Length: 190
Image 1 (cartoon, rainbow, N blue to C red):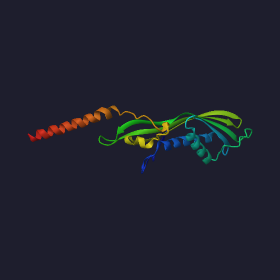
Image 2 (cartoon, rainbow, N blue to C red; image 1 turned 120 degrees about the vertical axis):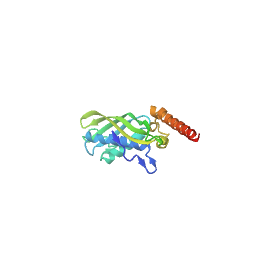
Image 3 (cartoon, helix red, strand yellow; image 1 turned 180 degrees about the horizontal axis):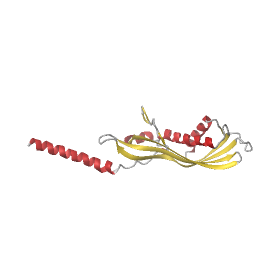
Image 4 (cartoon, rainbow, N blue to C red; image 1 turned 45 degrees about the vertical axis):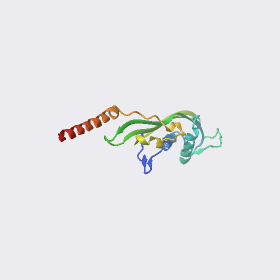
């Protein structure tokens, strides 16, 4: 699992789409172990909904690694590969809501993760590679809507409830402290 170091920019937390792009990039880079350098590739993404999101980033990464995506479909060439990319899961999760201290704002862990299966046909072989990637960081609980894209459901996630301490102990401490202050105020006056 990869921890995002620079998840907070000067303008706020980075969007969920950027985290998901990084997850796709990390997954595609792992194909270098299976594909020969500078091979021609035909990429077929098996994600009926939002395949453009995964396909666009995958092609960018493959091109940056020196592969020729789109190829000329000469299946008898040794350096031509068909890559079928199945998307088992891609999305965002929010977990672990907490406060750094009693009176500070709440933060939560944000995780972008994906599971891909790649069927690679070429070079006289037909093999399947399964890749799982995750990136986690922390964001302010109140800023979750800023990082989500309403047009892309996989960039959104339900918010977790606070912990037992967050929900009951924190307010109980505040009520008790207020009660002590009121009691002391009236006991000192009399």
